[in-house]
Amino acid sequence: MATSNALSVERGAHDMRVRPEPELTAAQASALRAALDDLLAEPVPLVLDLRALERLDACGLQLLLAFVAARRTLGLACSIDADNAVVRDAVRVSGLGQHLGLDLAEQPIA
Image 1: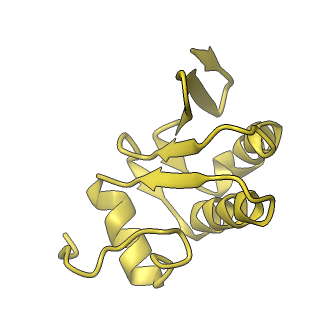
Image 2: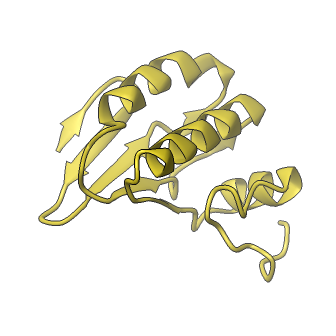
């Protein structure tokens, strides 16, 4: 598993799981953006694992949205593992679920 200051990367046989640090806010955005830029063109399906996220602000959401959109533009698979109340709530409140590939319609806001 490779690790940078902003995230850890676990390369599997058929995909890559990327885990950012527990806070994805404006304070971490620059470092995370640089780390994600390095992974943008990886040819394997990429999973953004946000299960351990403790804080997520609008800047963090914008960064996730830009990364997912850029991967899709390149024709590369990117999904988000958002089994986390912080992420679900932020995505539901922002209305970005569909753009991030998350169906949160049935899940209540905590």
